[in-house]
Each structure stands twice: as structure tokens, then as C-alpha cells.
Amino acid sequence: MAMRQTPLTCSGHTRPVVDLAFSGITPYGYFLISACKDGKPMLRQGDTGDWIGTFLGHKGAVWGATLNKEATKAATAAADFTAKVWDAVTGDELLTLAHKHIVKSVNFTQDSGYLLTGGQDKILRIYDLCKPEADPQEISGHTSAIKKALWYSDDKQILSAADDKTVRLWDRASMDVVKTLQFDTSVSSMEYIPDGEILIITYGKTVAFYNALGLDLIKTVDAPAPINSASLHPDKDFFVAGGDDFKLYKYDYNTKEELESYKGHFGPVHCVRFSPDGELYASGSEDGTLRLWQTAVGKTYGLWKCVLPEELVSENSDTLYGSTPEIKA
Amino acid sequence: MKPVCVLRMPRGPDGSSRGFDPTSERYLALCPTTISSSDSAVDSATFVEEQKARTVLRERYIRSLLAMVKKDVHFTMYERVKVNAVFGASDIDILNFQVSDLQTPLGVQKEALIRCPDIISYSFSIDAGLKD
Image: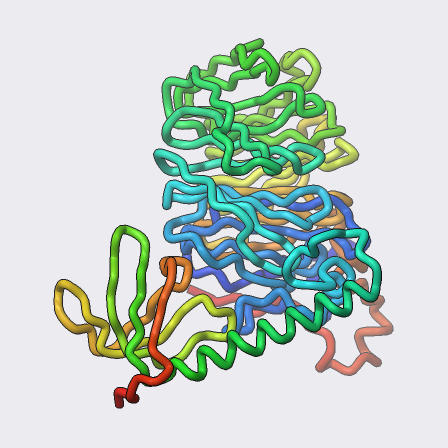
């Protein structure tokens, strides 16, 4: 029996949620960090959305946030011209890395030994987290603010997307550009999962998929509205996208067919990511909330419970909720 | 179509602290001490001794905060700021100090919150009289 999706709304932020990231799967489950313009990034349990803690210390909007694989460290990029590294278990601030302008993106290497940052000053920086007082390595080349910077192909390369309408691939050792992808419009998001062979880039209403090895275009899919972020399912059978029309779209990756679309957010969707096990995806919006959506609607997972018709009658109605209470405008 | 049932809503911030529950399974497993130990391969006898030292230091610090209440405190802060104020209280995470009569170049601020990360050092006289 087809069921209607019940998104789980995670409240707590007081301003738009602009970035989110999942950790890998750890012995304690997986975790989610959200970057918010209120300057207070939050850590949540990934499968339930339960709040774990808030990283306090930034003095401006937080534009980017990331977790290392083991969810033991977090990094954030903010409008206060700093990137910070945090202990994701205690919530303590470990390092403050001063920059010359707003920092937009942060990314750990697989071993959490190095942090890559990028922002409004157009320079990519690599910090050795074992020697944080040392000057970072700097890579210049972009002619506009950097939006996103990611480690690539086993941390041997770096991918960066900027407002100069390019995505550039850099060799880490030589610090030279290896390849440049030129676009007609600014890239809104870029996602690459280490282990995955596919890179997703969104721009305008387009979601584009690239072969990670040669950065060759595989396919593009056009959405009904400008897209701000997209994410590919770990098994590469679906992808989800969200943008300016407040909706979440789910597509079949192979056929490019739009499978589902969901209303729910009260503002543009800024970021969307699949969980590492692919069972759910999280979206962050201008409306200040994070929502968790099931990949397989109706399946028992996290806080969602598959209830058979007979059970609905006999269960204590206090313990089950038919639908989330939505505020009607 | 029937909506999918949900056990409860995700829990939100509790409003009273920044979270990171020190009694959670993950915290206890990954952080036996809050400051990184001098040597990760430390034996249990040294560990116990170190923990005793931490307890003494922590208690001493908390008592110093108590001793500071209603006293005039001199704060040295970033951006070459040096101010005096009467200490009231600290929050539980030692992230903010509540002070009164904060002497600033713009005048006296009756009540203020000083962000602890902005403080480089502070000092007060234990023998000084109380300021009500």
C-alpha cells in the first residue's frame, strides 16, 4: 500500500540552514552537522535527527560545516573570517584558523590530518592539523569567491567550485591546475563521495553527473526549478535535489525520471544529502529547519515505524503520530 | 494515502546547555578525560593519579570563581582592551561571565555579559571588599 512521506522536522536553528554534512557510519551510528546563519552549528544523531550539541564560538554566520568519517572531529567555515576545528564528542573548540575574508567551505582528508578551506578571498588553503601554527599551503587561481572545496581521488587532488563559473581540479603535490570545467552560470553545489565514482554539480535548473576519474560528463537532468543542491544515493539508483521552489525532488538516476516531489519546507532548500546508508536524506532550508526524508517511504527505520492496518487499531494512540503537526500559514 | 507513522519528533536543543552529554555511551567510550592525556599508553596507576590532580585543579578553579563573586575584577582582553567590572557569575560551560558596572571608554555598563573566549586573563584581590 503506497504511503505518504512523513518528514521529520529538526528545529533549533533560528536562521537559514545553509549547509549540512553526514559523517561515515561509526560504532555509535552516524551523525549530521548543520551550518546555520545564526552562527551556531549543531550536531545531531543522523538516523533520528535528535540534537546532540551545539558548537559555540563563531561570531558570524556559519557557511560550511563538515564531519570527519569517524564523527570525532568537526570543522566549520564562517563569516567571522575563521574556520574552526572542533572535538565532535565534547563540543570543545580545538583550533581557530584565521583567514582574510569570509570562509565558505571546509573539508577533512580521509585521515583527518589536513583541512582544506576556501572562501571569499579566492584562495584554497591546506592546513596540517598536526602543526596548526604553521602557515597553510595556499593555492591561487580562482578569480572569484570559492563556494566549495573538496579533497578528491584519495586526497591526491583538490576540486574547487567558485563564482567565476569554473570548477577546477588541482594536483595537491604540484598545486597546479589539472583540468578546468567552464560553465555559463555559477555552480550552486558540488558533491563527491570518496569511494563513489561520480561527482554531482548543480547549476541553474541542471543536475550534472561527471565521471570522477576523467571528469567527463556522464549525463545531465533538468529540474522544474533552480536547484541549489543535489545528492546521489550510495547505490547510485536515485538522486535527490532541492532548490528555490521549496520542494525536494527524487529522480531515478538511470532513467532520469522524476519519481517523487515533496513540499514541506517554507523556504528555498539550500542543501540536501543522503545518509551514508542511503536510508534517508536530509534537507536544510531558508526556513531554519532541517528535515529528514525516507528513501523507502513506509519502511521502519529511525523514528519512522511501519504500522500494519491491524496494529493501528490496537496500539495505544498516544505513542504513534499519524502525521507531523504542520503550521498552516 | 495514509501518512507514515512516527514514534516521536526528533529531540531539539534543551535550551539550558550546549549539549554533548558527558554520560552518553559515545562520550564515555571516546573521552575518559576531558583534556588529552600526556601519554595515551599511560598505565592505570598514573591515570588515577592524573585524574586526582585534575579533580583538585577543577575544584580549585570553581572555588576561585566563587571567591570572585561581588569583587572587582580586572580583565585583559583581545584588541588591547582592559576593563574592570564586578563579577556576578559564570555559566556552566565557562563561556560567559555575568558582570555588573563594567567600566568601558563609552561609560559604565550596569549589566553585561563578557564572552570568555574574548578574555586573555583576569585578576582580582581575594582580600578586597565586596561591591554590592
